[in-house]
View 1 (spheres, each protein chain N blue to C red):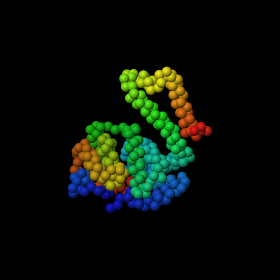
View 2: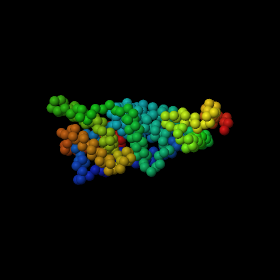
View 3: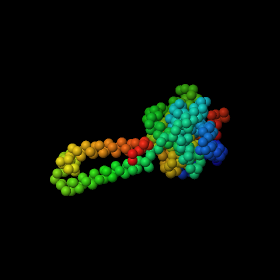
View 4: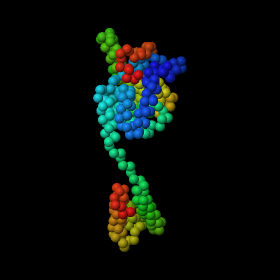
Length: 135
Length: 208
């Protein structure tokens, strides 16, 4: 037995009955099948293909594209708010978004935006999954 | 004085290194040597964390699997055993966070019965079991240092490297944990008992 505690300076270091009890505990012997079960698990692990890492490199153009799209949208919104602040309020957020687009083309813009987002997600997922890739 | 566990660790260091190199070169079977050498300490360490034999084996198995997966991450700065114990402590800690071991508050741990009331040997055995169970009832931040302190044969530096904490922090938590135990079992306080070595024919050879 060894201890790094100094009995001269630390009264906790004195070896008392609690130390004796806790230090004298008998050790368990692993069950006879432990080694075999363990190696079986390791072989299974070894046979399992490694998880496919996320293809950051392939995803990067898509991520940049999305970030740029959101950036552009934010920029346009800020511009629209600055140009016409009385039209924008927290309570009228739907008006806010609509005002960022041209009012007369409102529905068409929304449909086009939805289609665009759907297209981008479809292309991005194909690219990440390693499909034929239109990008 | 060097502990038996320490001597074992030194003696097996070369074998561990050789086995690790073989495993990293693609020889799955070489991991068996590592498991064979360390299964005893790992199961015992897990047992001290949860006091449930079957769960201890499951936790030790999980630790070995994590070691298998992370073998390339052992940077040889510390000994293989230090790395393995630190990894195992992390595994056991997170396992016990997910599914805590059933334990009771420290004040509810039964007092050891009076020896006169029962057969002396049985009473002593029950008293010792109460003290060991009380360790699991300690608050977690004090429990782990106490568990590892006696597992590592009272080597504070080994506890510190297993937990990844400075020696001073370990000593402080250890002192607090042992204080709590002494308060719970005041009749054991100050009772100086020579620390026994492994009894002849005991199961202690697993760590040696």
